[in-house]
Image (tube, rainbow, N blue to C red; front, side, top):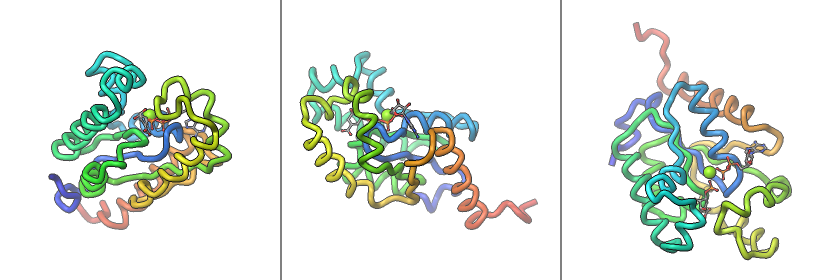
Length: 190
Ligand SMILES: Nc1ncnc2c1ncn2[C@@H]1O[C@H](COP(=O)(O)OP(=O)(O)O)[C@@H](O)[C@H]1O
Ligand SMILES: O=C(O)C1=C[C@@H](OP(=O)(O)O)[C@@H](O)[C@H](O)C1
Ligand SMILES: [Mg+2]
């Protein structure tokens, strides 16, 4: 496993985590464009591999199989790549090995959103998120709250409540620039 002490800070992958619908895919693609990096969305990779949407993969093969494929994709990226912007699904950090691999090899940003803001997005999410289907609002709130502890260990938490996706991406870039300059300054290198 690549360890983040072996990869220069400025070249480490950036991994976005957080609950379904907080904006990992949208913000990740803005971030990649703004930083001139490749964007990898793990759900999109899996959907391409299986040539079917996530909902169908869950129905046909089950969530357990989805988690195995998800783990394979993420571990491979952690081992073999740098300079990527990676959006992982909201359940990826349920797997301890995935969480540890990301934290060891990459800079992990937790996109936080409060429940009140999140629930306004439910309608537009439910058709494409199998883990939101056939649940009451109270059950979804329980899932939302119980998932928070898997995101609690991260390198930086971004409060996205008051920001649009582009603003979140800009804020992440400011945070990265501060960290990069502090820990691996470019001044005096040439
Ligand atoms: N900061 C934001 N403010 C408002 N809406 C957003 C924001 N980020 C994402 N969205 C919207 O929320 C929905 C879910 O975003 P998505 O990027 O698919 O989330 P995730 O990948 O975390 O599941 C999309 O319709 C997207 O346009
Ligand atoms: O949290 C989850 O269990 C899931 C989140 C989804 O990704 P997003 O977080 O991008 O919606 C996707 O991986 C799958 O539907 C399962
Ligand atoms: Mg997504």
